[in-house]
Structures are given as structure tokens and as C-alpha cells.
Amino acid sequence: MGAGNESKYQYLAGICVNIITISYGGFTGWPSASFYELQSHNSPLESGPMSNADIGWVGAMICVGGTLGTMFFSWFADRFGRKKCLLLVALPSLLGWWIIPYATTPTHLCIARVLGGMSGGGIFVVNPIYTTELAQDHIRGILGTMLMLAFNFGILSAFVLGHFLSYGTVAWIMSLLTIAFLFCFPFLPETPQHLMSNNKVKKAEKSLKYYRNIRALSHEWPANFKAELDKLKGENKKEDEEDSNAITWQDLNDPIACKAFIIGIGIINLMQFSGCFAMLNYTANIFKESGSDLSPTISAIVVGFIQLVGSYVSALLVERAGRKLLLLISTVGIAMGHTIFGTYTYLNLLGYDVQNFTWVPVASFSVTIFIASWGLMGLPYLVISEIMPPKLRSLGVMICMITMWLTGILMLKYLPVMVEVMGMHGMVFTFAGICSVGVIFLAIFVPETKGESIDEILASL
Image (cartoon, rainbow, N blue to C red; front, side, top):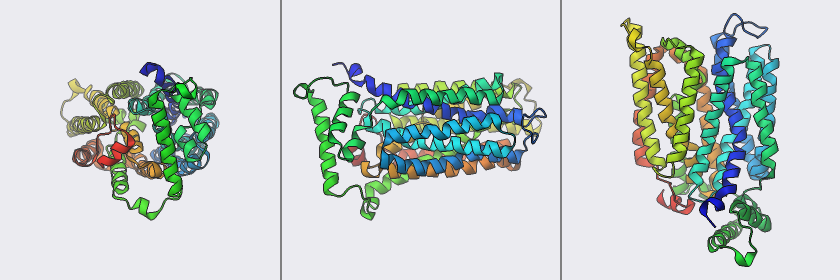
């Protein structure tokens, strides 16, 4: 049996589970496409044009929802399974999209963003665990990068639709993706690892056979499949003997676990304080402030397309170049891109003639997002799910994701304030400095996980 044939249902699972990720990407890109309209004199809200304070709150609410969703769906995934959890994630996604067309005040939009953020919290905490648990080592990285590929496609879709259609129409269209997910995903089985950890041995065996495309009788099973199944059974037996479902202080105080937590939280903070995620939510506004002569919404579409291409490059390179190298290259690239962007805006502020260089903001920010999509904006989710000990994986991913959402609240709420107080140049120079320090952290602490089994990764910590 060919490797591609053996893996086809793993790819199918990766595609199906990420249909709803596209919808969540729309939630992230929607503000950039809509804030310009909502702040204009022709604002569709009955309360009138939104203020900068309103924009900050609506922008930040997605992270409030993300924090709540991360905590709830992490618990739900462990208690009831990854599959049921991901299906439940569709509920706040649909409600969030369906509130937007009927919104008459910024408060209504805040509620919609909280619900959308809850779905994102579930997606970003459970999707990497789901794909890590069902994937073989040689395609685990590709399936992991599908998350950001789908997410970025959703952002671009919101940018494009928002340019041509009203923000209410965009919400109806994007909600159709969540409905499509509910039609596709229920037919896939729960992950073998979760089933085995709950002593559902026959179901775990059936699930593993499905994801490895094994249709033969037990005496005809390939040797590598039997070895994988025996390993799953052995891990489950060991967990039973140790009463492994109960996480103890000894588990948390283990040096490997401690290092995994430090690396995970460090990568997440670097990703957030690089400024890329926050700036994406305000792409159109940023180009308006920077002095670019391109239409803000067209600039956002350009950036969204380049980001999508960057995440596709990541999918191609992740099993070739490795996670660590891509993280290092992307972080250096972000620092350089921010520096160029900041230099342009500072010279423009000082009154220098930059008329011949009005393409610089779009070009530098596009390159920054392109390089960020290779590594720092996508790979942390994969790396965190890989380096966490299996027993602590759900808890570890949950803590890292809560950190991401809480820092996201600060970044989205106060990014407009940073621009006002520090100037656009001061803000991006600060982000560039943080990335420079981050390169040192990545080089010293983060292990390479490409092609390694989970046991080998833990041994390298």
C-alpha cells in the first residue's frame, strides 16, 4: 500500500475539520473589511458612526470569547471527545455570524465577536490536538499547517467579500461555511488516542484502521499498523496502572513538562507581541494612517492574499526545512519588515518627500505577513501540541491558548492607542525590537520536531 493511499483519510480529516477554521478566519478578517464602513457617515448602525473606542472594544471582544472558548472547549474535549467538541464549536460560530446582520449598536457587534471568538478558542485548542492524535509522524506537520492555511483563506475571503458586499451580506455568506462543516465532519471517527485513553479499545482499533486506510482482516494487518496499535494499547495500559487521568503536582513539576510549558508560553507571547495578529485586524486602518495611496480595502486584500500564499509555502516547507528553521527565518523577517515600515512612516511624519515611495507600506507589511505566515503565525500551534507530554497535552495547549487570547485582548484593545501615543513608527519599531529578542529565545530553547515521534521530541527537551 502506497504512503499516499495510506494517508488519504488523514488528509480528508484535515480538510474537513478546517472548513470551520475558514469561517473563523472570516471573523478575524471581518473588522478590517467592515470598520471602514462602520466608521463612515453612512454607517449602517442605528447608533451612528463608531468611535475609535468602539472599534477597540469590538476588535478586542474576539479575544474575550477566545479565552472563554479555550477554557470550556478544552474541558469538553477531554470529557466528551475531540469530535463532539469540534461539532459543538459550530454553535457559537453560527450565532455570531447570524447576529451581525441584525446589529444596530456596537454592543450587538461585541456580542457577535465574543461568540465568534468562542468558536475560535475551540478551534485553536482542539484542532491541533485532533490532528496530532490521528496523524502519522511524516504528515503531522502538513496537517498542522492546514489550520493556518484555512484560517488565512478565511481572512482573505472576508477582505474580498467586504470590498464588494455589505458587512451583513458577508456574515450570511461566511455562516454557510459553518453549515458545510456540520455536513462534512460528523462522518469522521474520534481520534484513536482519545478512544484508547477511555478504554474503548475496539473503537480505537476501528478508528486507527480508518485513518490508516486499513481494510484487511486482523491476520493481514501490515506490521507497522500492528506496531502502532500495540504502542497505543501499551500507553493506555501504562496510564491505567498510574491512574493517569488524574494530573498530579509531580506531573506538572517534571522538568520536561516545565520546559514544554515555558517554550509554549514563550512562543505564544512572541507571536502576539510581534504585532502581526493585531495589525491584521486593523489592516485597512493601518494603511490609511501610513499614508499609502492605495485604497485601504484593496491594500487589505493584497495583504490577505500574500498571507495565504505564505501559509501555503509553510505547508510545503514544514516537513522539509523543519519547524525551528522556519520560526527563526520568519521572526527575523518580521523584525526587518517592521523596521522598513516604521522608517517610511517616520520619514513621512518628519515631512520628507516620500511621494515616490508610497508603495513601501503595502510592500513591507505584505512581506512581513508573508514571512510571518511561514512560521511565527502558524507553527506555534503545531509545535505546542507536539512538545507537550500526552498526559498534559490538553492542559498545556489550553494554558498556552489562554495566554494567547489574554495578550490578544491587550493588543487589539490598545493597538489604536499605541498608534496615537507612539505614532505608527514607534509602534512597529517596538514590535521589531521584541522580534529581535525572540530570535535568541527560539535559537536557544525551541527543539526541532520535524519527523520525530512524540517520544523522541520529549527526550530532546
